[in-house]
Image 1 (tube, rainbow, N blue to C red):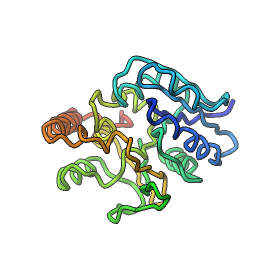
Image 2: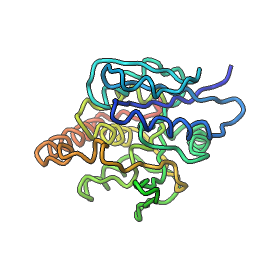
Image 3: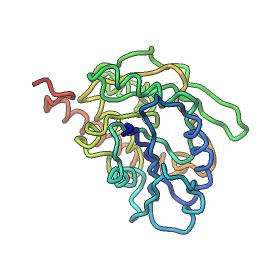
Image 4: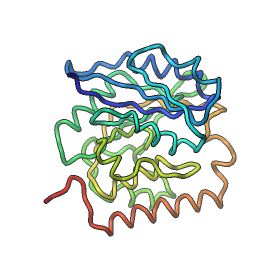
Length: 252
């Protein structure tokens, strides 16, 4: 039986038309001979606007549920996650060739690494790409390093949570994504950083689409009062996990 890496995508009707490009990028991934991917597409709500864009492929599972935001939606998708690793892929983003294989190589090669991230290029509406000029060095990220950087740089981490690939048992132990209206993936990143070592790959691992309909481009996302509240609970959770002393993998 082949081993699986699970791709989890939360989607709602306005972004569903981008699923075609995300699927194409998955089909272009080359995995080791004994590996395959399983794509779980979980709709945030129940509409007639997503299903027509879901690929007809036995490697794809489509589910719907009550609306709850991307964090709740992705966590509900974990009910179908039947593999050892979980890779995040937003509906409007794309994986460059080799991204999944690089994640697997790191996680299979070092059991002390709980999660991976990689370099991101913003994919602009005109097709051009823009990179981040402060990427860390290629290699391991020690526990607490992301929180320290995030706190010192106005709540901006040095690695992008949309590129996460996570050991499934660790993701479940942390309860999946945070139940927040936004920054739910940052909350997961900082929780992972609090309990386990990570890894950063300097090769591009994600094309992050910039378009007018994306959730992070809406005015509600930058509301100062809500943002402060989100950041406060994200930090509090990370610090509580650090104080608990629990680490992954367990040392005893």
